[in-house]
Length: 270
Image (cartoon, rainbow, N blue to C red):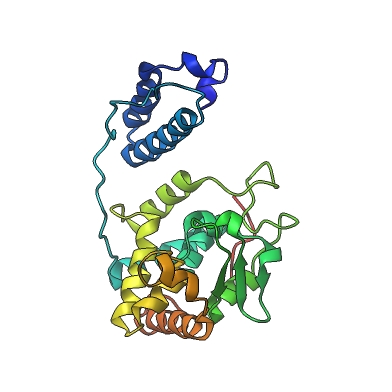
């Protein structure tokens, strides 16, 4: 933690850890507090294992917030409202929203997307392991609408598709501002970006897509692909993944959630 950069390792006490965690809770970010505490505890446990410390300053500290598992799935009406609002908002956040809805990938993976990762002629996006949650490279089939959106985007950086406003070598990070604008335009607030991933996965399951294909699209390392089974099950299911994502896109079109008009990406980046 940058707050401790002037501290010797052995000088960090329990109250120092609590000060950091309590500050995150005070900012109204309980989930972030849990993640921060888990990372801090893991680091100090490693220090104890290596003999750098005798006792972890995290000893006796409980998880700062209760983990509430979300089960929010957006309705077709809500998705349609958000999609129309994203068309008004345009680049970058409106486009980020559309790609999240179409690809089911994680927010950081979409925002960090580079032109070098894409093969639009083959309709493929290769996410390097350095940018995936499980550390494994992930091949994502791109649907016709996703390809069309990407083909019509302006290019403001040598590689990043969504660069930061000032530092073009860094990815976009204005999630909060972008989502507030989208919420206001759609008059819908009780949702998160991660809900789009859950909504698409649930939608594909309802459309008859097999669970192991959905897991492969989501790049989950648990379930069908967990443990020893995952080590030996190397088949990529690329064909099945493409069919599933195209089935999901067809549902979005047929339900009136989105249309085939992918032009008008709005070349003004901010």
